[in-house]
Length: 101
Image (cartoon, rainbow, N blue to C red; front, side):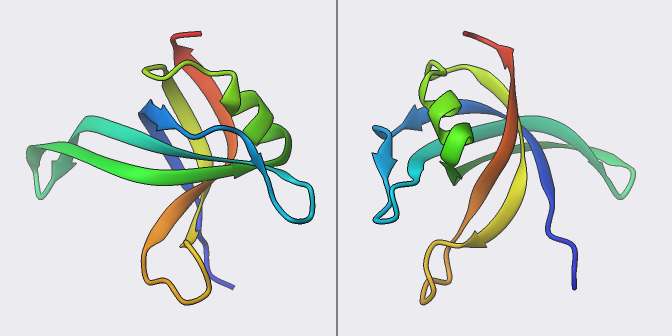
């Protein structure tokens, strides 16, 4: 088994309305915006990128209450959007609000 773990500080740019899977599990799709300075090859590099993310269960319910624009620290893993997709999204398994509501 390989390791697939991600910890990311990002702004919650936008979020969809809380929905439910066919199995009745709460789900929330959202968009995150990350900005930071990273060291690479001994040089500082400005990093800015956006990512799609999804949360399920109690994490989705809690995230639905967070205001857009809030800064959060997310923990999760990356997976394809669907079985046939080559696009990936972050699956948020935990988060903490750093700034905002």
